[in-house]
Image (cartoon, rainbow, N blue to C red; front, top):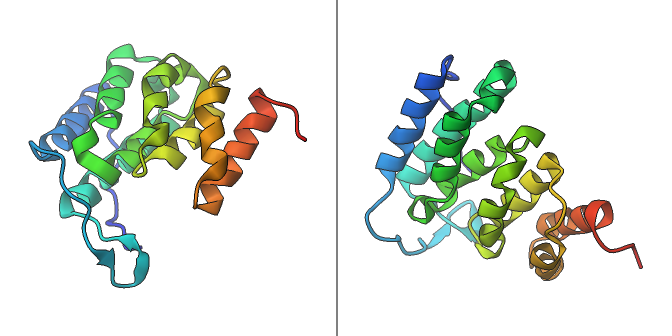
Length: 169
């Protein structure tokens, strides 16, 4: 799948807040319908241009957390990134924002993200992030994803359950 390159990583908390606001402004007022299949990948729907743009912004935010770990402890920054991650109308553009939260200091946001485990646009990214957060306690929410039609999501669900849940059978 084609992804737009993400912009340079924000270098201040204010820039992360601004980037997150820009992503939120990309969201259409109404939840957009699923597009027809992507030409190069017929089993996956095409992406809206706003999804590509929001995804790139989220990737730049993720890189900011890696390059400047102090941002991981800034509650205003975390709250805004969570707000974007939860904006359903951004559809798959939220994926990178959800993955940007994949660190232990963001664990308090796990409960906010778990309702999106059943969202086909971001469910796999939520499991990935819960694992990175070391967020235990969500076995019942993750278990249904053992039946996902996507192998990578099933594998992440197994990984989560092996670390935080039921013993392997």
